[in-house]
Image (cartoon, rainbow, N blue to C red; front, side):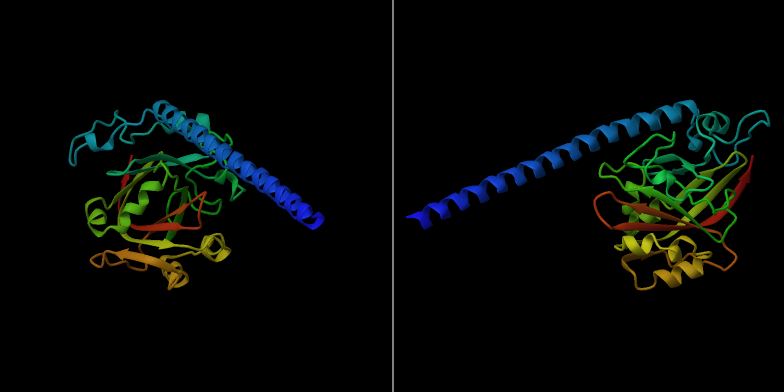
Amino acid sequence: MTHSSHSVGDIMKINKVSIILISFLLLMITSFVILYIISTMKEQVTIELIREQAQVMDFNFILPGEAIHDSERRIPIDFDALQRLNEDIYAWIRIPGLNIDYPIVQSVDDPSYYTRRDFKRKPSMFGAIFTLPDECREFTESNTIIYGYKSMNDRMFGPLKQYLDTSFMSEFDTIKIFTPTNIYTYQVFAAMKHNSMSFMQSNQFYFAQSFESLDSILNGKYTDKIQNSDIEIKPEDRVITLSTSNLLSNQRYLIRAVLVQVEYN
């Protein structure tokens, strides 16, 4: 009888502990979801304010060959206004066909600074779209890597996963990058999925100095790859690599595009 009483008591204690643990887990999940929703709303407000203050215009309204007076601003971004908000903003990325229309920032000395701060240097779950301190701000290197979060609501670099569809890549293969003086036009030629956080954070990946070295590093390390075989990449070409990161998984998307045109303001 005593043994049976002890067993029932032990079971009740175990049940109480289980209930407490489950309740704690549910509380943590609920807190995370609430924080995620709040962070998403704040991030959207921040982006809209930045777009408004930067007087972002739709570059597609300027037709090819259309005459533009010297007095008109050809760069559709007001970088003076942006840099008054944050001097680390040095470029703007736009991908027609996707909801990607954001500033690009670069810390002068801290590679991870913008992984947890937004474009206005405020704490953020989603960080900002950024390049590392050693990257050239004029996009003159053989391979420039641009980082951004892949959020669940398809903001920031979330829509990039669509490039793993061949027909989508064919239709929306243009990436525009604006700086205070130049407009860079790139053509997407490859998209791949990668599942290793530790590899993506390694110095080997960060400091791949050319598209050949990055191709060599990535060989065999991706799970899916789509490539436009009609585009020939030459050693002298300049390539950008858009790299996503994810709060909830190690999965990464890499989108690669080659420079096809530079326009000077």
